[in-house]
Length: 208
Image 1: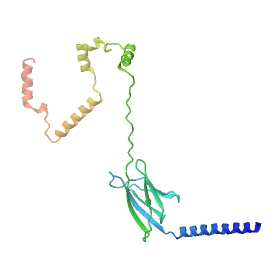
Image 2: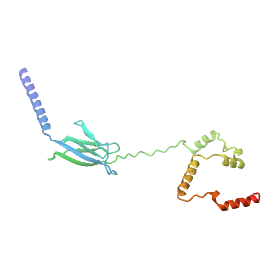
Image 3: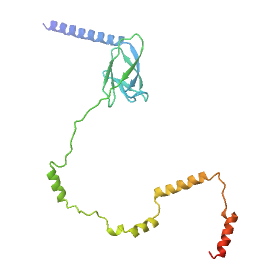
Image 4: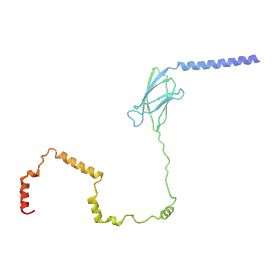
C-alpha cells in the first residue's frame, strides 16, 4: 500500500512538471512586438504627455513624452493598461499580429466627477443672524474725522503731496513721448528772437 501511494505521488509530481513545462514553452513561443503609439485627448492636438502605459502582469511599462508618443516591447496577448490623472483608464490587448511592429492611436476620455452642491448657511434662520449682528454693538458712525474733510486742508494736501509711483511714471512717459515727437523738429532759442527783445525793451520803458 505504501509503494502504491509513492508511485501515485511521483506520477502526480511528474504530471505537474509536464504541465508547467508546457506553459513555459508556450510563453517562450510568444513573439515580441514593439508597440508604439500616440496618446491623444479630446482637446489635444500634439498629444498628451505623462501617460502611463504598462503591463501589470509583466511589471514593465513606460510613459508618453511631451508629444504623447510612446514605444515599448510587449508580447502577444499582453493586456496593456493606459492611465493618466484626470482621465478614464483604457485597456488594450495586444493581438497576434504578423508584423513585429504595431502602432496604435489612443484617445483618452476625461474623468469628470460632479460633486454634490453644498449650500453654506452660517446661521440657521434670519432671526438668529439679526441677534448676532445686534450683539456685536457695531458703531454706526463711519469713523472719519470731520476735521480731515476741511476743503482748505484738502486743497493744501493736493498742492503739496508729491506724486506717487503711477503719477511719476505717467509724467516720465509724457516727457519721453514729447521728446520723441520733437526729435526731428527745429528748436528755437528765445534769446535770438528779435521780437522778444523788442517786447523786452518796450516793457522796460514802461517799468514792467
